[in-house]
Amino acid sequence: MGVEAFRELETRAEGIIARFHRTLSAYDVHKEAKAGLEVSIETSKKELEDLKNLIILQDKSIELCKEAVEYYTGKAKGRVTQLIKGGLVAIFYDRQLDFKIEIGNRGASKTARFLMSEGSAPFRDVYSHGAGFTSVVAMLLRIHFIMEMGYPRYLILDEAMTRISDIYVDGFFEFLNKVIKSLGFEVLFITHDPRFVEYGDAIYSFIRPGIIKKVSTLEAVRIINRKSEENPPDSFVEGE
Image (tube, rainbow, N blue to C red; front, side, top):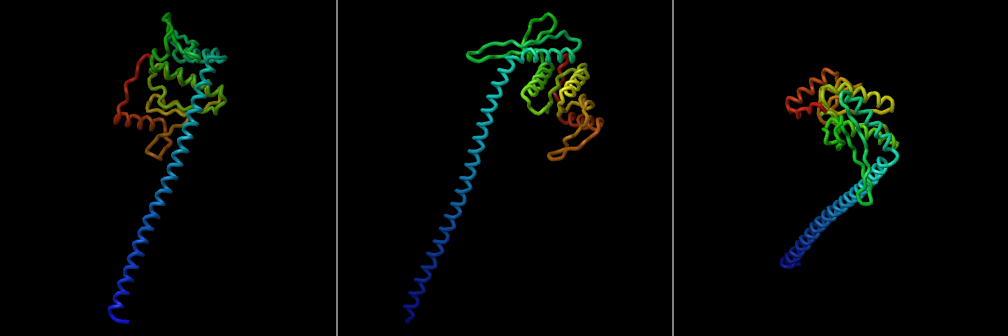
């Protein structure tokens, strides 16, 4: 074989090798694209499943709200009224408070208004009387609803009573303890208010994400006061 023929073969071989490498590179790109597409498809499937679960949860929430409206506009009206009126009188002992539920209609649906009065004043919506009263009524509604619906008797109160005046704090916790002990409830009370820590059976402080420490009453007050100095809370609304 002559030198020219050999060089021609060598050139053809280099061309074949170059085409092979280009083909291999194209295959790798296609493989990566395919893998990326598969990941994208799996992500989309998960997002679709999450969306379906959210829709199911929303449907359940709507049904629960409908049940609640039917419940409070039906046979439970008297029992709920009695519980809330008793709670308001026990906690706000020096106020002449009254409570009632007013049933109405909005189109084809029933509505329930929660009304309160003080002394000889006319009945008004509970929320218009202030955050302290509203918080107590909301808590009692939750307790009663949990009992009647047969849900586990756990109650989470997250910054629920920060607007209640100092003179009613003892009365509130005395009433709450009687209710939860008689009905078998467990309560998780989350607060940044140092007035409340002494009423807990056990006190835990959130140190940082993932770190929760059991502390004494005195230590809890110190932690809350230190955090309050760093981030001052809103002032309390007196008289509620």
